[in-house]
Length: 205
Ligand code: TMP
Image 1 (cartoon, rainbow, N blue to C red):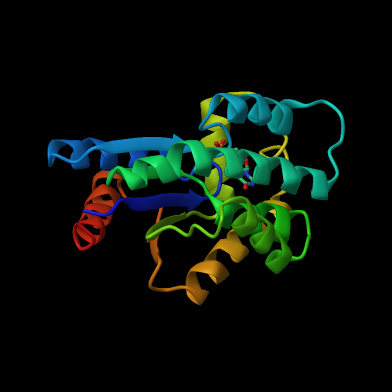
Image 2 (image 1 turned 90 degrees about the vertical axis):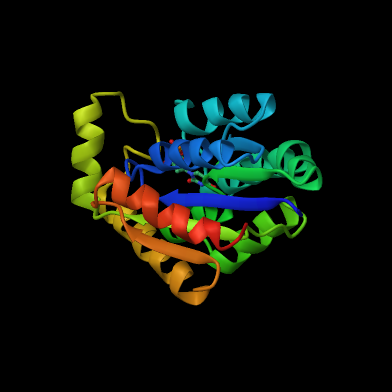
């Protein structure tokens, strides 16, 4: 079988890592080889970039931020995603280029299509076979992050209006590419969401 590339997108606290772990578990139990990655931070270089992007104290201008995410993406795609797909494996990844369009495009108010083109250049044109968008209202997302009691990173600390623009952008991206996206209400129960994702992924196997 040719490899498969599945990404999970959504605001902070929408449950992406929980759902990607459950999906990976199920695929492995079905006999598939799964590579689980994330952006930023799916590689050693990516972990260093993640630290800079999310925890750097000084200001980072939006274009520099977009380029840092693109650098992480270029390295992750070339060294993790493509090789796994070439081996016929399934890559499940938390966040990909749609996050750049939503956060750097809509959030930081850069041109969304330029940000997308930058990402596609970085990734040599690779688009996911399926993108699961876990959609959650900004207030609910904030409540979940508050409950975690962790220190907010640079993006999480942004105002509600920023996160509203991000959410609207994700939904617009999904509406523009309905075949690639599965949009789910992230407020639903974990098991129900996992089942809906499995049903859709099963159609691709
Ligand atoms: P994470 O905590 O979900 O791993 O993501 C880290 C943060 O990085 C999250 O707030 C979203 C943000 N982000 C972007 O702004 N642009 C991107 O291209 C990616 C991949 C993440």
